[in-house]
Image (cartoon, rainbow, N blue to C red; front, side):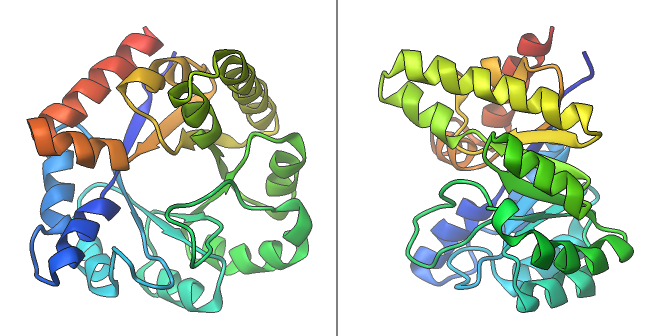
Length: 246
């Protein structure tokens, strides 16, 4: 199997910084450490309420990174303008609600297909790879393909939650759904990524799915870094991903 890329999400470095309203810890420094530790890309989600990553962070990441930046964003005119100004390597369109703690579920592409097709067209024309963050659902994958997305990122949150709750039969059924939908997306010519909630315990079965090309992992790695440091946390995740592919 092809080597599986690891995108490191640095949002929650900014969460810690913002808790005190200082310049520390610096998300760009975390991104550079992640690169040195073997990350293949950096993910940052500029939320509408700016609860973690800020506009200034995106400016600094675009100027200071040599790795590709995956810019997560809601499908709003404001975010489209920001993405078109910066032209990151990739934009990942995600659902966003002000009251949620984190992204809950995937984007409902099938219900908003016409608007999203027009929304992503300028991003593609600007040279950004467009990814859609969706549940492992055939209707959503097919809709993402129809609107012209190049990549789908399958939401692994339900699988990880079921594992944490000890609901193993349901967890295995969700993993099988991820397996089937990764196959469908690949057959349609979409590049397949996955992410959300992955840990050392849950990453291997997902990483073993042969159609996957990239995992995006953030919250767990930033949390683990408190205890062992960011480079060792990323290194251990890299080892587990590689072993699953082997």
